[in-house]
Image (cartoon, rainbow, N blue to C red; front, top):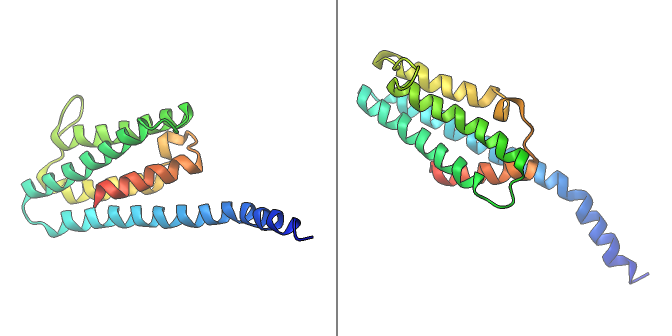
Length: 151
């Protein structure tokens, strides 16, 4: 009976791991949403359009850096890498639109507040990677990296 106790403890721990991972993922996602909200508030609270662009550019740069770092991790599956490419593509498009590069029209100075809100809404509502599945473990790694780089 005493020999079975460690096995039962291990089974209980293994059974609770998905719940704990889900709670951690929820907390990280909440922190990411807070970072998005903070970016929008900073942009709205800034009166100078040039400074608004700098705030938006800094946010986009940090997100791109975090996504590129996550892509370089050995533990990320090929499917997750493809999904990361999709998210990275979104941030490349935000950057191009912010400055009017490529086929994008430059966001007018008067539209920067709305553009910040658009980024937040798009990141909150759009499926990661355009609907491509990202594993829970990869999502946690990505959110941790993004949160570290955002602050």
